[in-house]
Image: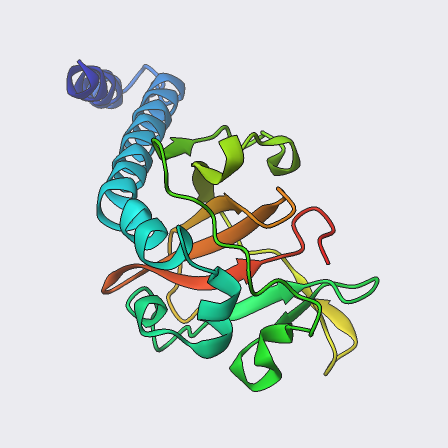
Length: 218
């Protein structure tokens, strides 16, 4: 039906163009094409999320989250975590040591402090769920079901951060242009959301950023 609508709209436009005394009908053509393009994009996004859940999401949770401490895996660069990383992107962590959100990588020990949690290991007992959430839903209001539920959705860009080099708020520039980004929210020790940003790379969706400042976490 979508293809029929598309070609019908184009047909009307072409037929109108062939009549010298009649102005081309372009409005309906444009709106129809835009509508189909949007529908196709939504279908592609849905397919990407489904593929992520089946191929990456649960695998990551089982290897790096459940019965494990993710902060420890990040700090120690655990082999399980490296499987989900891309060398061109690396791994960086958003953190909030004061009034501004910083972004730190390996050279800055990912911004970890002595008081950060390196003990909490979420249980995997019972049924675990990965749920696609509405993009307008507040992550600070999510119910993680004691850690057994994680949430995800597509985002258009990564959070900004305060750069200590420029003393300005900066945007993250990725090595892959127009790469799709999926954020997955998991529960931390204090039942707050920890955001995990997976980037679409030539080798699939890879973890590139961890955000421990989603709700003003410290």
